[in-house]
Image 1 (cartoon, rainbow, N blue to C red):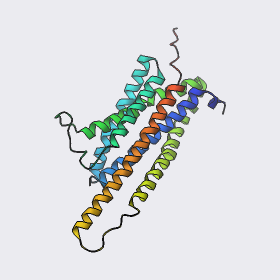
Image 2: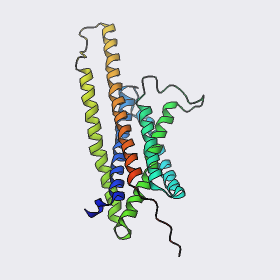
Image 3: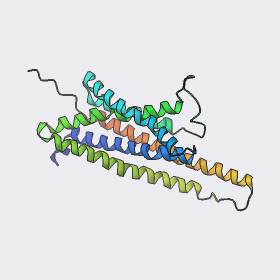
Image 4: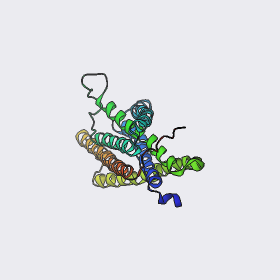
Length: 236
């Protein structure tokens, strides 16, 4: 427990948990959104999520390199989380036509770039946050420190996701409480019901993605305030 009195240790652990919650939200809700609203099959939903997942390993490599070049864990970790927050904020503006527009006339869609940006930010924070915690525990306890990092990320994925998902479902049920399916074969009434129901789904996802963006900004502030700089290299 004495390790939690070290701000760099506790800050790294909490930052890692928040990033885990953000990752879990993306892993669950992007495929569900693809299927429920964009009417994609399982393959299409997986390929949509792949845009985000590709950014994570690229971001992880970039984050490690930047931390070494800038000699700053806090700047790189905070920048990665802010980038991911911006990505989720962009995702919170999606509507039924969001998968159509292309980026500057290129084959890349704007939605693809937004997903990649989100994954890139989630990847960038991995190396500096992990390294900051391992530096805080020292050589003899690095194995335990690495295990604790995984545990905190899993806790963040479970607890953080549950809180955000519960909040989103509460908002969805509140929005659809007065939405009653039409009785009979009136096509106009049924079409209106479908439009309103889809809008309620979008509103739920918008709320969830915005809440995730806020959580990631809090994680960025936490990283900026608590992570220590890289130790000076020891010359032999």
